[in-house]
Length: 201
Image (cartoon, rainbow, N blue to C red; front, top):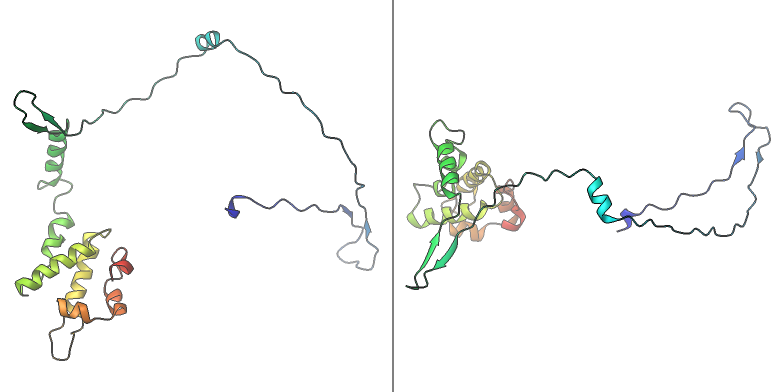
């Protein structure tokens, strides 16, 4: 709150300096302004009353901004005769779907996006057991919040290769036992590039 207000400027005394940079022995003359007491000035506020009808006709009409097409959301409708509820799709869902389909098609601007090659469902180690693969997918999903797919894939690779074993002789890498036994600082270092990694440790 204090940053919003600046302190009032300090008043300076006016001085008449007769010295020069080379002569430091000359006397310095100072002059102070005498204090004067002034009475407050009263002002009277005047207002003009303008006829609204005259003003509205004399001013040029304002151009209204172009209106965007309002999207109608999906709403459930109940048939009064049968009592069945049906949900109709939003008004522009087909246009949006076709646009996305065109972008994601081969040759489109979004074909081969990182989510296609590095999505969470693809980050599990295929050589691990089925239980560990499910655990890998779960960890990838938990790390993916507020994180790009490429960064998430790198963090998952580090966990799968660099996570220390929970006991000597055990297999290192990403599994439940190793995650439970690892020090929080080591885990934080392995996933430091992930968004909000301090909360995910």
